[in-house]
Amino acid sequence: MSLNSNMNLATSKLGLLKRILIRPEFSAVIAAFFIYVFFCIVAEPFRTLAASMTILYQASTIGVMAVGVSLLMIGGEFDLSAGVAVVSVAVVTSITTHDLGVPLFVGIILSLISSVAIGIWNGWLVTKTGIHSFLITLSALFMLFGMNLGFCRLFTRTVATPNLADTPGHSLLRKIFATEFRIAEDPGSKLSILIIYWLLFVGIATFILLRTRIGNWIFAAGGNQNSARAVGVPVTKVKIGLFAFVGFSAWFYSMHQISAYNSIQAGSGVGNEFLYIIAAVVGGCALTGGYGSAIGSAIGALIYGMAVQGIVYAGWDPSWFRLFLGFLLLLAVLLNLNVKRFSTRK
Amino acid sequence: MTSNSAISLKNISKFYGGMQALNSVNLEIKPGEVTCILGDNGAGKSTLIKIISGLHQADEGEMLVNGSKVNFTSPREALDAGIATVYQDLAVVDLMETWRNFFLGSEIRKNIPLLKPLDVKAMREIASTELERFGIKLTNINQVMGTLSGGQRQCVAITRAVYFGAKVLILDEPTAALGVKQSSVVLNYVDKAREVGLAVIFITHNPRHAYLIGDHFLILKLGKVNLDAYRSEISSEQLVREMAGGEELVLLAQQLENKDK
Image (cartoon, rainbow over all chains, first blue to last red; front, top):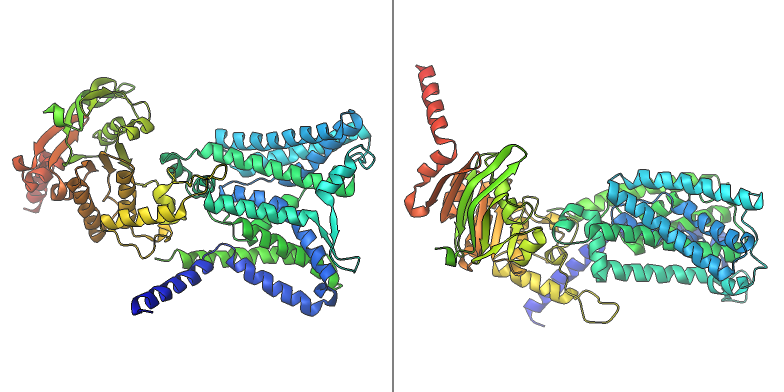
């Protein structure tokens, strides 16, 4: 090999190292590794295959939504209504099916339409008025929260959505959205299909972000929307599309919820939007937009899963979990700040 | 004269409410020339370039591009006619790689149905060859835009405009925010753009930068053409004097001298 090509190799290796270092999810991967090792040491049951499956399942319950939320954050916006939107989908599906008598698949389509419409509504308001998405979606959070409970009470006189277990078509829905695969002799080792969907979401989102025109536009819309507009990027459409995708994700995750648990508490969901945002930020998304990754959000969700289960396996009081999550978020934000400084150093 | 002009402005006037921002401005912009538009704040420089770049429409007068009359209603139309504007903020996204910035809004895609993925390899190659052709050496085309120097960023924005078919390049105060060294990088670059036959419109309030690179100078004052001269017709000192509100400064200098006495 000539000297020249050796040098090329050396510089490309250096480039690779730096390229890994500047990846948004870099610090999250390191953190995930240490958290895994930590819980393996302090909690013996954590090391089993069954535990891994439970952790992955926990992660996927946050992860599916975190993909959409991270894309939206890269595009420079927030969605605080993402948590209750999942419940809204369940409310619409169950009430139309159970109380208004439409077939299940019609209820599902109605909830899909309404969930995407809520996303479009949020996006339209944000882009039209220029009001920060934090405020627009905060109002959406409360409106949806109120409607979830209000409509549920109105139709069922309870605060739980009607049980769909006996509805024709529910078993098929369950097969599609909540199948569990036994992967070992031990009855605890079950792989939920939600995990597979989650990884699929992450893969597709990563492809879109890094290898399509839309992905380029998402980064540009979040990074500097005026510049993006000046070179012809349809920023408004991109943003509305991202809100709509969060709406679609809420529908998808809710399909899992209603097929796995048949009924959902209409008052639940509040607070989950923060878990999605935490997963995205821990995974390297910048709060200011224009920076982040879908893989990062998955690692953020994985850290969430390990923390929530690890504390249980270690036999500690689960109250400490939120302290841990908050601390982790702070750590992630501080770490990302430094990584970004390093990578953009002149 | 008109026939070989890239852009001809004839008696262009513009009113904002009761205020007249431009008063019957005539200007010939030719390929292979750097036309410098100078003027104080509020002289009408930005109104003039906004009309040329399609952001605003003139209230009176007409504009000809390559000899035919045009009436741009949007920047996109001006762009399609080969008139590109590089604004001070450059329209770049700092957190994105240089090649992504270069092709932002005009991405090259592979012809795979449905997916239509980006042709990353082609875009990287074209961006680095185009930049190199104009003498911009980047260590890495994957470098995030924010890590480039001010002059380099300016040059990337200009190269991008040229690559996407600009025949007329409007540079809005390209050296205003730059130090001496960075300014010379950009001025050098403007010279290269002229060499390849572009018509360059250089907006500045720095007559020294203008005289370094310009072929043709237009000074605006309160919306009117105060001076329209070719390089052979004017010296650097004259330009500085004319530009900086010449008489006022001479007057001020005299006053200050008298004070000392």
